[in-house]
Image 1 (cartoon, rainbow, N blue to C red):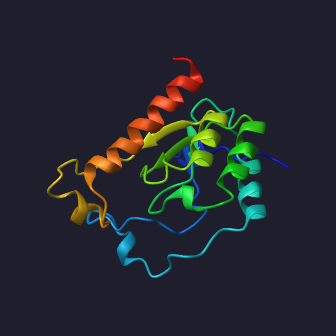
Image 2: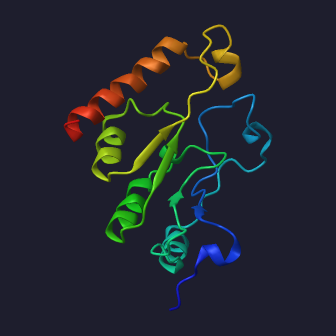
Image 3: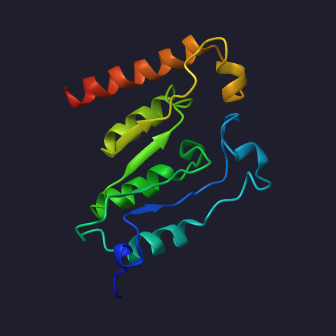
Length: 158
């Protein structure tokens, strides 16, 4: 099977939204307007897509699994990350950080050695709840992210 070079189409990042679900309703995101908030791409299709891309080309940067969703809501995400690690596919994992308080998520994100970006917007305690569309105090939200970062640092011996 011939590999697809994304750069031939003007792209250098592969973005797969494996699930349409999100656990926030941010005022700056179109997610609350989406009609479909439950569908998932079947795992076989995700693997077929991943296996078709030429990740060795010089312009390719990474694959990511988010757009207007939260990838940690997909219970299969760590199977997908394992597949990427086994195939040496670079991953840039983007999360809103709300589920970084779950031990399994912490261990697996560290285990699969992904580059992790935590999307923190609206760090104003007076605007946080409305802007992020959830009933969670900013301090509590940030503390769970700090705890995750400290755990990741400890695991990586940084």
